[in-house]
Image: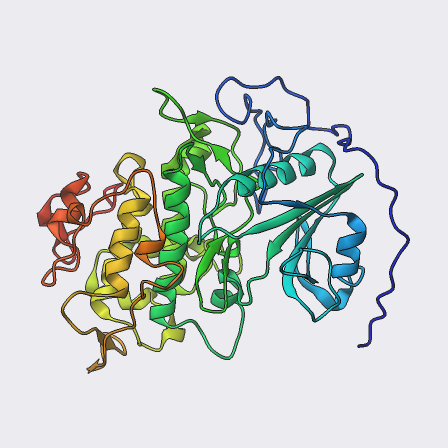
Length: 449
């Protein structure tokens, strides 16, 4: 290859010692409720809602986990060919991600092209802030394991160098497939499969023994493997949910504009329903092929939620916002069901569904009961009948048999009726709407628009 990747001198190892806090950071006393302490207030910027995190209780220690390996910096240098530019597979504000190789049995560094491929995230040195997010991810993924969470293999803490070692997911992020130009857009069936996997991962977090609020659910944090199974990544902003009789966690506003729930932005009160809102935004991205926030567009079209919302409950108008790259190859009834589900996810906070309920609806979208799916080029074109979309097998990593949670919503509580896009049972189970609202065109937005 054109780039020469030589090994640098081995860094001198030193004990972990986070850099002193810079402007805007302060060492806070430990909080009484959960992993983090009382928040600070911070202003919004264009891309993210904040850049500072509250202080974790585990700001010094890594929680013990037998599943994680502590790599040395020199090991990861060897595995990535000294972080060779040819091995760069991703970059962002957090730092760069490189592909590398390790022995799948011993987890020792291997020669390039041999053994198991890994993804090595090399964080930029950002003092205390970078260290806190790094620790949050290590401690979160080190304790939680699920088929729809990216697997953290190990970490490296060597002086100021902080690295994370993950399984490598061949297809990259959902963002890449939805918004980057490519030869083949995601099919309707694949989009639903990705949505199911992401929903299962989020549901697992919300229903864990100690609830976790993801806080930064977005297309770029959903990674896809070679079989298009979705896995959640980047847990640097994850936060423990409320305990006891508390209904929310008070924290500074942090996340990504376009995905963050409006009530969270306004009050700083964080609940699992904030994640549900973000999930609804991603559903809209899957439907429309548009970004949550697009400054290249003008007026209301910049904000996906505001632009799409008036069309979601109207079968006759929905086709106007559907992703044109689907070329009409989607089930009209299924698209409407997904649109209505998205509408409730982005609706009033107290009326949003739980993620267990969202999973149930999405599963039935992928494998509709007792009927074949019907595709439409558009509202103006004739219908074309095709075979039913493929379903998930029990051997699939994101099949229902692979998912176990502490609290599971029964299928009877949210069921789809073959004669009704979204049955009254589903819509009234949690008091979202009365059955009369289910008629096409009669569903009002939570704000009454």
